[in-house]
Length: 334
Image 1 (cartoon, rainbow, N blue to C red):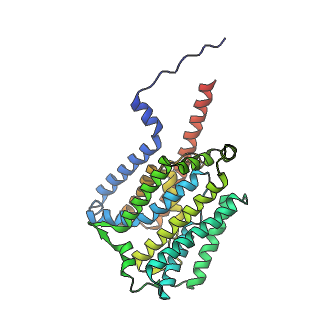
Image 2 (cartoon, rainbow, N blue to C red; image 1 turned 90 degrees about the vertical axis):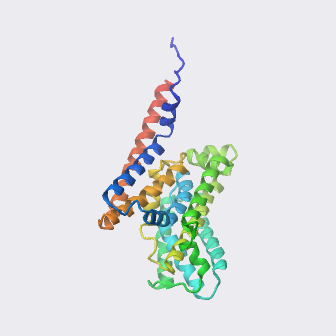
């Protein structure tokens, strides 16, 4: 006859470290990156450069928050870079045609939501894998942007209020960064304090089980792509406002940076586990690495190598941690 003993409670510190291992590891890596680049260059830790880092990271963070929801459902959105480029170009074209910037912002948000909703419909209601749908979207949306602009940049003129969104400051802090922080706080609240956030995690853990207990699983799955589309619209307009133009060539490699930030932050590609805090840290880490390498006069193309390596290592660690937890759970249940 088997004898069962109660598992002894560990220390609170050990339990906390075990539960938040991935977030703590990326936080440590983030600090090490800052210390490394701060020691290698004299300009990295200057106030002007640090504000520039958070300004440039703002569009990535906005989309990364939405991508966290998408990946938490065990999905992926490879089209975010192309969608940002399309919104970026479309906003410039609309304003060049004489439409005011406030109306343009509303129209771009609607366009982003519709594009994301269309992709979500194919994924959720037609059962096509997210990878295939968004890969097609990556090509289609970039192609539409190129067709509309014919490969040229479209200048934006006489839109000071719009430019303020990308270049302005409040109390010395960049407006794009403040917008990104508000989006991150909203994402944090949604994931931890709302029924919708719990439904997203449930769908990612087991969509069929979520459906059987009465959750609108398909609607939840489709909705995260609507959120992704909205986030891309915001990011596209922030880039257009900062540069003062719209281009179909904007946001090249954007999806790589966003996905790297999310998986580096501890969100599981298998779904059912997400960390908004980790996403913020992952985004800032990617931004710091890109900025630091440039200040060290290293080729900007090398940043792509570093980003790809980070994705591979993060996914490897992610998979190993989940596999280890599964084996531990099986051993304990035995």
